[in-house]
Amino acid sequence: MRQRAARDQQRLDSGAVTSPKDLSNLQHEIASLAKRQGDLEDVVLEVMERREAAQERVTELTERVASVQSKIDDATGRRDAAFEEIDGETASVTKEREVVAAAIPADLLKLYDKLRVQQGGIGAAKLYARTCQGCRQELAITELSEIRAAAPDAVVRCENCSRILVRTAESGL
Ligand SMILES: [Zn+2]
Image (cartoon, helix red, strand yellow):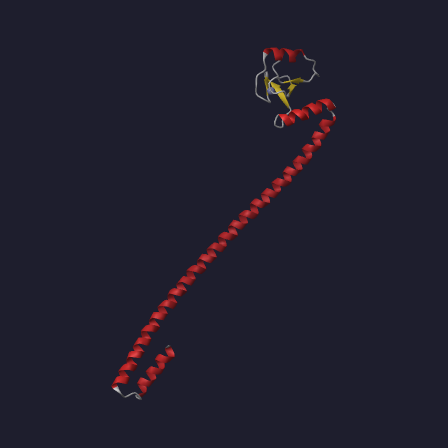
């Protein structure tokens, strides 16, 4: 378009066009070409501005993705460390349990395991201040008398929840 405008201008300047009508047409075309060039320049400018804004948004979003990814990496690392810790604890507690279980008579261990399954994972509970710590129920006077009379190595159980009761100095007997 610029070339065409320059060529028109050359023809006009050269004096080769003499007819008033042709001159007027040429001048008109040059003016219209100049206006179209201006319009196109505005469009180019607008497109460039929009491109710049889009580029800024891309940069911003890329940064956010990197920040979120770094948070994910951090959380994943902490989770893995926690898993490792839990695995280690499980292994050590399992070993401890084996040692303790080996020292307990087989029939008592069997009873404990059965109760543990029935009572949501807790087969034995401390008797503390006349209360079963398994079901949180205070024992009846008659029950307490029976427990008091039982031999120290006898297995006593809660009348309410059936769990094995572990007697201590704080049992309130
Ligand atoms: Zn109980």
